[in-house]
Figure 1 (tube, helix red, strand yellow):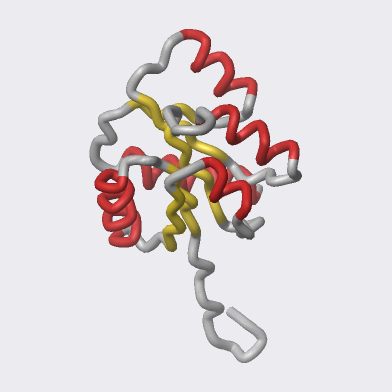
Figure 2: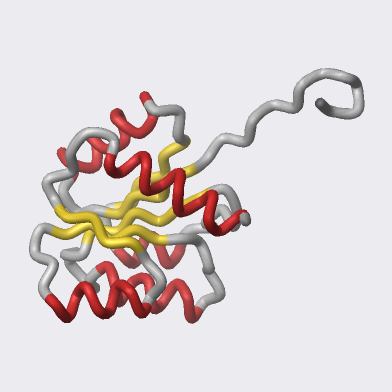
Length: 132
């Protein structure tokens, strides 16, 4: 309950999705919004770096293969800039090195194809872990 005796509105969680594939980006936006998330999309690492990102109640969802930097390089640059949001790396080719680097970056790895509720569940879990 809030100070007026009513129920405080639930905070809306945000997914910041970065993928250069416009069709996939649109599909992810549609799916995640249906699940109640606010979705911010970017097609390049450069636009993410230049954006004013939310600092709480949000999760980065980064495609590994981006045109100017891979998802882990983007995550490294965001961390260096003080962005500590939880992150999920999405890839269809998770070799041993990508898996190791993802763990070291304290990110979650999800392999394509994205099936069912896998992504939205991972986003909610990552944000909840960061809040606790």
